[in-house]
Length: 161
Image (cartoon, rainbow, N blue to C red):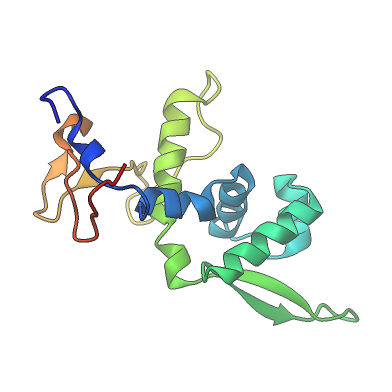
């Protein structure tokens, strides 16, 4: 490797956590479904009506999120109706909240209408807007993304190509 070659090229991406996460989360409709559940919309018909996701796509995304342990199906029976299901976040699903918050934060900054974003995430206790942030295990808040660098982790494997 030369000094201009990125060190990352020495390591395999076969077991990359980003690629694996995106194999679950990568479809636009998946994050839209998660947005709905995080916002308290748990029933299929409500979710479909509010999100605009096509019924079959929604059904597929919900099944996949249940299969991956991100959501659980909880039965309920409307009066006079058949048993239906609500979708609730598992602890694994709740762990995605910072991801959704980061996407919402980025979207508010770069994709919102001129008058601002239609939704703000706020701290329940003080009402202030919540921002996605990088914090290292040492407790340092990183205010410049360039302060973060990749390094091989415990699962790193040398690149064989």
